[in-house]
Image (tube, rainbow, N blue to C red; front, side, top):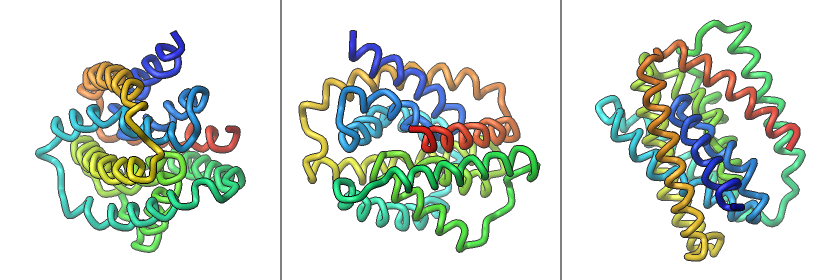
Length: 239
């Protein structure tokens, strides 16, 4: 019953959120998983729970994937995530999380009520800051999605382009960061049953999300992304 409440049901919700907005599954899962697992282990399990769902989404939108749009941001993001993994047990992250939460809430309000659309390309220095901050928090908590969602959303003209880019990006990231977590002993074979249970939930949620996104366009996706970024910020502020 514990696994059902803290793994399967959250994974279904995470699959729906990820399938509609392109990110957010880890935020949902990290509300529940730390109840039964240490935070570093929870981050690793949360990432792997969505692996099959990411494959499903990346395959669905495969014709819109633009590899060059993904590779160089991933190199920056992954390098910072690797460094953050080495710091996970040696820094106090509560203040950092609160600062990130405030930033995300401010960005959400800005895009929802001031800036009417998010298709303008960001200056290169802003894009790099997004990648560094996202990689850092991905390494610590497995939550690197909100700012990368803004980045990929700014480059996309259609919902297919956006969802293809961000799902392919996270799929590559999962392969990379999970390998490091297993190598460092953060994850082990004992975690596999929970991961498999979560994967079932994630797949169910993704299938539900696919039925929802059929009726959505890029503008509707944008609004959902901006709202979820604000929710993400509140999560960081009050966790």
